[in-house]
Length: 344
Image (cartoon, rainbow, N blue to C red; front, side, top):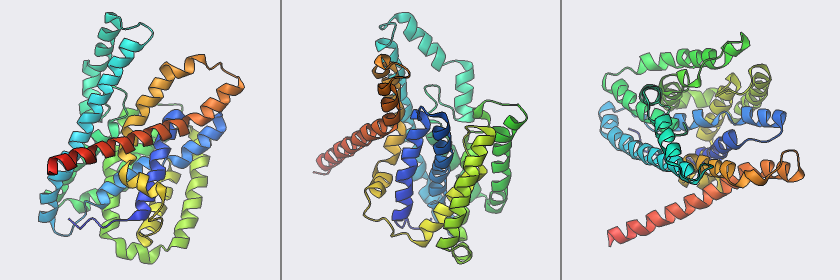
């Protein structure tokens, strides 16, 4: 596996992407503005998968196989911790919610989280039974498992060839069916196979072909493609509504990635770069619980249509992001203290 060289510009975009994920879930109260911004941020999750795949590339397949277990183990523990966290969050909602901790509410939530359908969706389609926010780390874990198979049996050409096929299936199931007034549950296309592995392998393919790609696409071309992707994504939102990714999103994430490969030192000292490097995964996991807490408690006194209502809902994405960031900072500090004590 190739040495993990630091790319500051990729971390910068990861910082922007993690705010985009927060924005997906908090949203603005203005429908059109929210939709336009939603479409612009839809590059976020593909970027995270691509970064993981990019840094799994290596010309020495044996070395790749030796280093994969450590990456897989890390994501496994992160995914497990996140799922346990949201299990506790659900119980807290049952205890502190409208029923004031009635046993029936607790029992109902257990049934809601753990039944045949939710377990199948969790194991097969990566949709965790708690709030579905952990689908990404679950899908990434499956991507590492599948990538071990790809690397071990040298199936790179097969899966590189499947990248456009799998993305096309995702777009048909998730976007195009809506045009014909047909819609299916998102877990059928928002999973490791039709979302995770194609972008994971796309990042891997970019690493393998980095030299020739950088020759063909300079920064100026990438900026034009980025602009076209943004415009196309907004147009797709007007056509099919709010969805996981758009064709424009793919152009955006590809152009961002290639620009980052051209200028890895750009934004090295940016605060956003630091967020992307150190805090993006924590923010991704924790932000949804803050939103749930606000919905349960803080928003009860906010009357619809009032000035306070609009101020609050326009500020909410920034509040959730800011509190999540403070939590990430405290968490990292605590980890540092524990590490220092352990090393003494």
